[in-house]
Image (cartoon, rainbow, N blue to C red; front, side):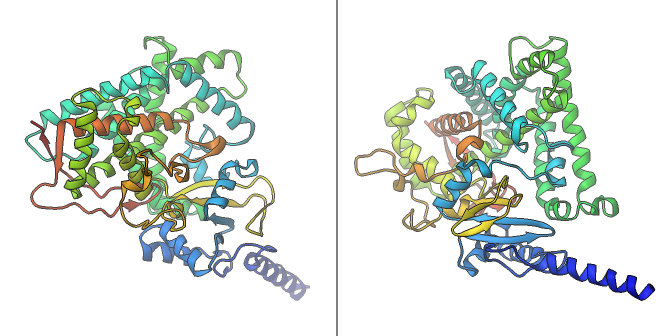
Length: 485
């Protein structure tokens, strides 16, 4: 009897192991799978070798000569898509609109898969529509938003003037300015300086912690019970609690009507009175977090890269200034000026191509079986979208590894090729804050360049090589901001 039990047990284990290493029928090519781990070891090795997961996966796709890379990370089926046709398909087709229901995603959303960034189905559709509608109702994406950005530009210029006797790190002022515009529409007011600094430090540390902890906690959530510190779980949960307290404080002030005017939190609280099913305080907190994360670091990182390029290329900076000076003089820039400043607009597009802020977009969860490039992708597979590789595709871009704003200007002097750019995604999951991001980047960049020449300091030219984690960021640098006469 004992031998029979052992035999059956061994057969079950052997069957399970065979199942974990057997690829589904017509699954895309990729590394060999090993029991329990899949090809996690290969992916981690390539990530370490090439400096980021995006570049490591790109090299694997080239190694297997495929535009659909098939992986298994732990027990999770993962597919990475390349090429414009495949990327547009994943961005726009409804079967790719899901989000993974993993422990790591729930941890990102303060414990539950809520909000609008990582939810899906009826909850996502209802709340994304509500969020976009009510943000627009209070002026988001309209003329008044440009005026709010201009006020933040004035604050940035004041900061630079007051600190003009020393080298300035753009990160010390840009994320705070973006956050203040976002928070004005979310919570109706600018954030107090001390609270703002604290919140930005939390979001920055949280982003780094998620980047470091992602593999551990995503593939083996149980490790948090044995290695809470090493896995990053303790740090992330502590920061989640602190961020929750910041958002809860804003909600409390709205419940007591101590914030004047109208804003998103007031709209949501009003809806809670009549719709208690999905409109909960937990959901409100998570949407607020989504809006803060989606806007602050990504938008400011584009500007930091833009100023970094100027520091490294003074001739290019002079060309941009000549256009701005000729077309605007000292006139405060607005979003409408982008049609007058063709070369400046082309430059900012090139920054977003060359330094793709989210090179590996997603993740998406496949809601039904799908076929990509003849490969069968099973339902529930996680799909990643390699936007970074598309932005360097030699079939679309001449000399893609050279920084050339001219690639976005046609023979008639008009902008071109921007339809091949996907910095904000595409389809129904397109970033809802793209109008704020584009306006902020343009107005602040032009406004700073109008007033200051930006140069490297102490004879040190900062590195142009980005740090690529969950998002891309410049390596820390400082610059001298020299007033223009």
